[in-house]
Structures are given as C-alpha cells and as structure tokens.
Length: 284
Image (cartoon, rainbow, N blue to C red; front, top):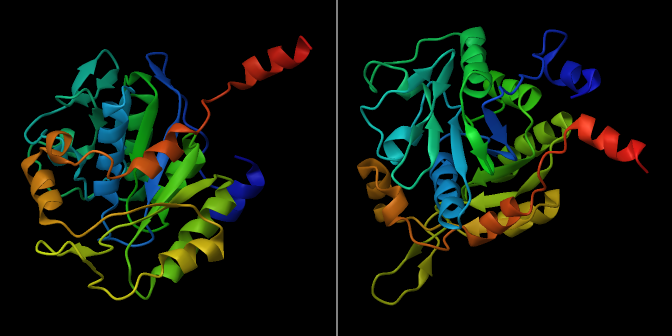
C-alpha cells in the first residue's frame, strides 16, 4: 500500500505490511466485511470456506474478529488449542481439512473475554499471519470484525488482501453501511468482489413462498448505486444457526447456497510476487 493510502486511512503511524513466513504459501487472501455487527458475516465466511473446500481447494480461515471469535465453534473446534512448531503456530484443522487460526484457540477457555487494547490486537493479527504455518493454501478467508476501525485498518494495510466480500442485511441503514465499507475499500485500493445479503427472506414451509420479514429488499438498488455484483441472498433459517452452534457447518450447510460468491472468489487471480514480475519483464 502506498504511503498516500496509509496516511489517508491510518495516519503516519499506520502499520506496514506483515511478512509471510517460509512455511506458508497463500495464493489468495479474501476479507469478509460488514459495516455493522449481527448481519451474519461469520456465517458467510464459514460458508465460503466450506464450499471452496468441497470444490477441492485448500482453504484457511484467519479469524480477525479477535474479541468476538466464532469460527472455531462453527467448525467443531470448541475446547481445542493451537499448537506450536518451533517459533510458529499451527492452525487447527477441521474434519474436512479447513485450517483455522483464532484467538479462541489461544485461550484457556473459549468463554474467557479478550481484554486487549488496539496495539495488542494488531499484534495478534500479525501473529496469525506472519507467525502461523499455514502451509500451501489456495484461499485464506479473513473473518473481519464489524465496522471499519483499527482491526480493519491493520488487515487491509498489513495483509495482501486480494478482494473483499461485503455482507449486509435488508434494513433501512443498509445503504449507509455499505457505503462505509465501499469507501474504505477504495481508500485501501482493494477491489470489492460483491455483496451478500443475509436474512433476506423466510421460506414458508407449507407453500414455499418467500416472505420478506424485514420489508422489501434494497439490495438491487444499493448494488447498482455502488456498482457491486450481487453474490447471493441467504434466507433466515434456524438450521443454519443450529449447525453453527453444533460445529457441524461442514456437513449441514446446503451445497450451492453461496454458488455465485464462490465463483466470484474463485475468479480472483493468484498473487504475483514483484520479483517474478520484474524477471518476466526483463526477459521480454
């Protein structure tokens, strides 16, 4: 990231890019972001990870929601703890092979509060990237905390994020919330891949009719206003919450639920290292 962008977003003390260790080979980094809490961002992150894994990709999830982590429980990792390999951490691995690193995997008890200030949280993000042995990954999904504050700045300035998926819900404030996320992405110089609307509707169990319990969706208008692709509409379904609570998202999440989002993420090109690009250019 240029100094201009870093200064505009975080001031003169904005963090520098974290280095990747030699036991990690991450091809693409995708951040899942919401402008506010409670819209199902972690569900979308977990769902993308599951669907990409089902398609045969090597997938990891970096849980950047340090003070409100939910990814480990979603993947059946409650009570488990990350181990070490020399000076590096080893992510926990789900039954289907999804790798996860989260603050909950470092706590004695998953219900212990994370009472850390901003600089310590930024250090945790660095540890989850630079000091974790991810191995070869096709995709590393970053489950962001809600909003556009310190952690979001740290992730976008310090990790090689290739694209952002925005998660929202059908409420009156959706346009303003999406605007905040889009404007932040523009300041960071990171492309927005599209938008997923969660809690979009309820399907009647008797007739199958879709009922918009929060009122008519504004998703199409918002997407058109900011030039975003619509990557999916997820229903209100108690079975999704039950699967997350039971740690069975890998087996109980219906296939194809996020098909458009998966296709968009899969289309993101791999990293091209500057040295490689320079060498290729020199040979022309």
